[in-house]
Image 1 (cartoon, rainbow, N blue to C red):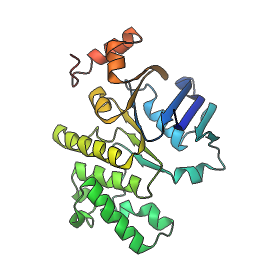
Image 2 (spheres, rainbow, N blue to C red; image 1 turned 90 degrees about the vertical axis):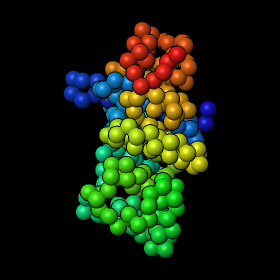
Image 3 (cartoon, one colour; image 1 turned 120 degrees about the vertical axis):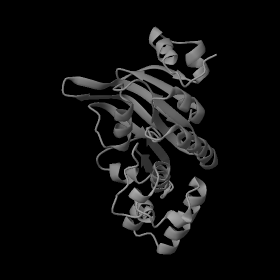
Amino acid sequence: MDALVQLDGVGKSFGAATAVHSLDLSFATGKTTALIGPSGCGKSTLLRLIVGLLQPDTGQVKVRDAAVTSENISQFRRGIGYVIQDGGLFPHLTARDNVLLMARQLGRPEDECRMRVEELCALTRFPLDALQRYPVELSGGQRQRVSLMRALALAPELLLLDEPLGALDPLVRAALQKDLKLIFQQLQQTAILVTHDLAEAAYLSDHIVLLNDGRVVQQGTLADLRDRPASAFVSEFLRAQRSLTLT
């Protein structure tokens, strides 16, 4: 497997509580991997370790076999797009200014920025005439589209999504799931998605990693988890997913 990101013995604790137990995990280039599991299992902690918001207590995060260090983390982050659950938009900036925040920080030409915004609006089906609105003037689905555009603005090598659709109503969520799947396919994007919804994970991802108590319980496709559960926990977790048809 051609791995873009690799975790070698990565562990993280907060005081006496261990969030991630020294795990090895690889994320394939051009594929979408879903991290799933109950609350507190370490999903979001793994994303923060990958993006460098947290430093591992043990092990290393590697990108294309090169260790990520304090010396190169800033450069590495420029190749990452990061989407969080509530969008994380700056309320005092318009949608356009939120999308172009980093591009302008890096001194990208305005003509290039304008063209990039138009491309992203077409990609995410965000209306051009809404770019001058502030986040409070946008719907929840529109805010998430702006957050996605901002994450994609610099054409990142890696896209991280932390429960990006969790706060949306079912109809909006379904529409965004469909659009995200098409975007992943069109861009051949390497993406790591955190979700608590196994149906969403199965729909959007190529590979599912089920976590519990900071450990990988099982990984593979939905069929692998359903037909060949590695433990009683896997079967119990699948039974608890009422949104998923398992028959």
